[in-house]
Image (cartoon, rainbow, N blue to C red; front, side):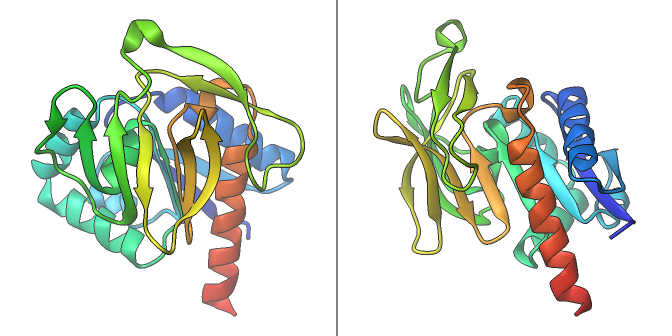
Length: 211
């Protein structure tokens, strides 16, 4: 498809890094497309796929709650099959439930589209950030460099959720249909395979829609 548009939810997080990684992924797949920051609901309606970057999940949820049109449109499009990649805080916002390792259950706005329960700050706080090689199902034999920054982990998954990767028995990458979630930041790894995976989901979704 020549008119592929991938949106980056431009509320918080590594927006420019995700634009660069997605552009690099499109190029490596010899596909034409645009990568655009998304700030308004009408922009969201025009994209074929979406990345929800990292940041602070409570703040992202609060900003979405203050913009009901954006939140409703986002939830509706995701429930209707729009492919998305939720990164760190972005994965938390996609989840059906989240709690904090230190303070327990928290009241924050979640989209409830990815059937997982997430533990925030599961690997510690900012100063405990780290990088490590990961084995990720479906990305080939070469390890993927995981960049963990105040990273969450997935404590439980629903029946339709496929576990893609673990670290020390903690689930750190999942997929449910066309929704992908990672505890780590693939846009900081220098490795575009997760962004390529999202683009592949977009291509498959569009081919199904137009077949």
